Image (cartoon, rainbow, N blue to C red):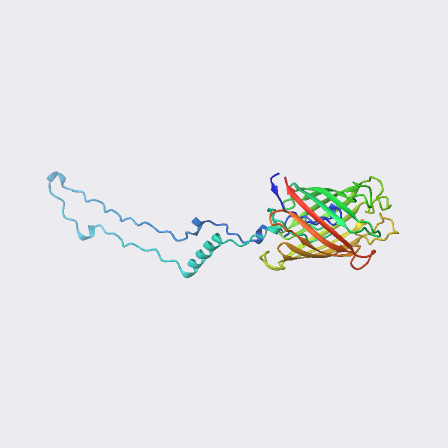
Length: 351
């Protein structure tokens, strides 16, 4: 393992709904931070010139055989030395420019590590919805979540997952492959879950788009304790999503410095839930999220999942350890059977 890497994500539902970036992004973004790239030598704009006095050609005796001394040199033959020239002092603007560059080298501006793959932790800007950014470059991510009760029951349950990001979303295409554990034994037999796939592409520093296919291959280990039988996640949920990060303040350490907007369209799990309707019915529905970086380690999120309204707070408690914790509430408006508390956490490592 090379080093810990941050992973923008919260895993309230199965792992496929986790938000990943890279960075960020808080798109990444490396060019969003004016870091001085010069060195001290490059600041020496003024150079001195060495002036060497020309040596006069010696007067050769033309009557040497007669042993007659040469005539004395005339004044025009006297070696002369041009007056030394002193380099002109730098102007006020040049002096100020040099001083500014020295100050940048000594005190570089703060780096925005939210959108670069640095060992910095960043809060999530999504709860359940997928986002345009994703994991790549051999980033392995883990998640676990808890629900105080599942929909239309009074039984609590948990979910977990594991996945890996491959490829390079900046220079080509990033890809995520994951397995989501849909239940800890309440809604379905323990270990029941499904595989998920996602392709994503960075567009510029602060935007990304992705297409995904969730629950494309299910694994079932019997019914759960609440008698629901098979998991209530639809098969073959497709989606197309885009995310844009707006920089309201250049310095990410300032409050309300980032605003993340996500919008997408999808089928299956993104369709309005009806307990009497087939899980695998057709059709498409819209979903979206709004995340605000309230402070560097905290973001607030409100989103429409396609089924209900959710709101929560995401916290990255450790600056150099990529743990993200997100408590939230789903079904605030009662579109299903009422509000449900959920709590999720995610972690990521780069190998």
